[in-house]
Length: 224
Image 1: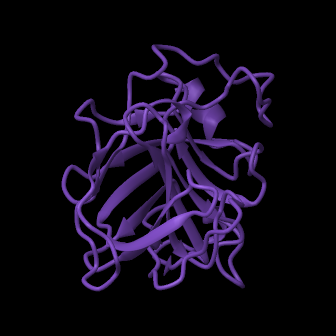
Image 2: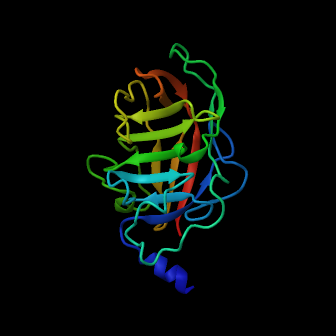
């Protein structure tokens, strides 16, 4: 109980989360249960210090050993096994006339498998913690990243305005945006509802190429 009380007093940066990821759709979990920040080198954050212009980030291989956080003095060291967890991205539903074809399922090994949401969230709401309970919004930009089986090709799916990771030469033209809802003081959902369209970019070529795809799925996130 002392541990839970201490975590409730977190600063408004590097807020550690647990995440439950959808089991159906284009974004699915790996069948190993909840994703916990710090376990198996997973990082699920609100307002990460490493990325001050991001409101949310989930990464399958967070560099705990390279980047200090605002609670580094008290935060526990990561446990478990690097690379033990993944997110699955089913790039199987091209938008008709959008130039794409079914590409199969990507598991994106290593650090190239993550989801980031821009900060500020909207012109009037800066971060998840500024949302009122019961409120929903569509963030300005969201980016999903992964690579192929041997990471010789790198991909981003953009939803909204621009690349959250500031990759040059890519944009979200023709995409729609996910929905973020605050469900309690400590919980939120991030939803890519049916019909959500993302612009998939292959960032590997010198001149990136892109197509439009439907992308459906969700994350339920909760403060640790």
